[in-house]
Length: 429
Image 1: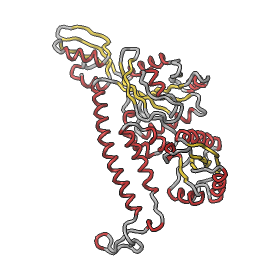
Image 2: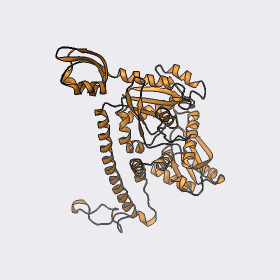
Image 3: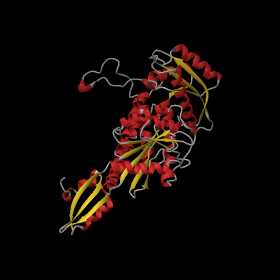
Image 4: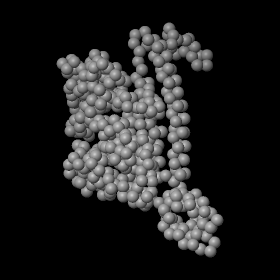
């Protein structure tokens, strides 16, 4: 799509289809978000078309009559592209473009385009390109003689090829498909290497006793603003969707004196393309391996619960559904919605990452939640093992020290990994 690379802003018509049990109100809300996505991609919305159907039309998604109406609307506003809020099959896309006389795409292509614009690191660019290629492969199509079939009179094992499979030679379509498959394989190999490096780094941090906290949430909920507020990370903050894509990891000192690694992640969105989730799975593994998730919610959003559900759906897809979660309603400075939402969600917090309201309570709650995840163990450490004594002070929280004749008796709060390393000095309870 590459909307922003054009010398002009594309003119877009949005299309939303309400299929039960969805409501017209929900469809309109989704189109509002799609309009934001289109604006972020660098285009202008000129018109909207809504339709109610019992089920999508197999050929054109909206039916031939509605497609003709959509063509007239597109001509009236001189639109370059029509964007559907739902995914189109390759056949539906081809049929619509033939009727409309212009490009027809879905929300997925818009999101992929935005990610392509915002990826900065080698890993981020590779992940986005991989997602784009996986989306493009089933949509490859040729024209005219390029659609000729594979040549050859013989089939597999020397048998004659089936009727209809013989032709003048390899098609351009097949050449393009093979080229894309080679590129996909190359990107997958690069990402496997980068994933292995990232996992090694996480294991090193874990061995050092560093707890990890990931900030997750809907796009534009204020995650980067919160990271900057807590750590002075200097991450780009803009009032637009997917302003930051590549994750950032910063050290955060909590009120109890313990230090954690705080990471910001890519924002989630409703109908997040499956190709994108798969391509970014290696990056999102850090979320699944976190000790705690800070789930930031925009309290001023029209439907915060829908955004919470969308984020939790993606968390489930990446294996992070069971990671402990702290729900934080952000933008308390905008109105009173945050106070009401906290009442509806026991154990949650309200704050403003912009003004700093509620930050002290958040830090204390983080400290308490992480401490609750640790276990209190009793150890008997010989006097000549000063390295063990130092390690316990460094990696855990020593609660009590009582000297004995041959050893030091210690009660300490340790995480599971640290407790495992010092198991041989643990006193059975």
